[in-house]
Length: 259
Ligand SMILES: NC(=O)c1ccc[n+]([C@@H]2O[C@H](COP(=O)([O-])OP(=O)(O)OC[C@H]3O[C@@H](n4cnc5c(N)ncnc54)[C@H](OP(=O)(O)O)[C@@H]3O)[C@@H](O)[C@H]2O)c1
Image (cartoon, rainbow, N blue to C red):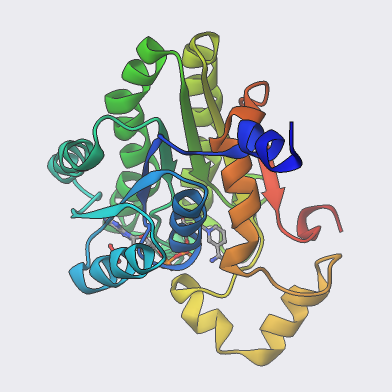
């Protein structure tokens, strides 16, 4: 067997269908591209059409199969519409990546019910509902991969974790519950934990060079994260190679969490 064939056997996503929420920007976009270039047909889900269309155009220009669904994952109807639209594009997915997220972080004492509700809806309830919609089918077919993107705040509180940290902590628990339910049927459920990654999500922080440098100094690698840093870990978790990895949090953070 050539090394190419061996690598394909481990990691190729040829013939797989993937849905990536938040796949039109930042980390989600990099993951969508990685899965598509590894062979999967990828459906990207987000609200803004222009960014979705640009992402799909870019993937198609690279010879990949891609489709888009515009939906608001902040409402239950929006999640249902997203799921149905996504399944229509290339069929029921084998891989679900929950990357869409929002980062509203007022001081906890000033955190209103609206921020709490929106944060929980997008960051936690949508991943749960999409899991309910797609997990059982993956289990029935004997193969599935669910990947959530969480946060350092899932593990410790800092820089006003607030509702955001609660939603990400619960998302890690959701991955474990899903892993318990579906791993016996070939469906693994894991989380990727970023450090600080310069994306539109944290424009305000990214525009402060001192804070950016201080965050880079907290890593072991010596720099902040790039969206592309998630490509390898995402392909691994989506592939056959990770069949015995489930219920885990994999830190893609340059050592930030252990420094
Ligand atoms: N960047 C970091 O340093 C960092 C650190 C830790 C964790 N994370 C996590 O990583 C994930 C991706 O973050 P990112 O930095 O790549 O952010 P980003 O560039 O802002 O991308 C967020 C994505 O989510 C989509 N989205 C947001 N609200 C949505 C909604 N209501 N319905 C549907 N789609 C929605 C956005 O598209 P639309 O706005 O068009 O809907 C966009 O595609 C998030 O879960 C975030 O919490 C990021």
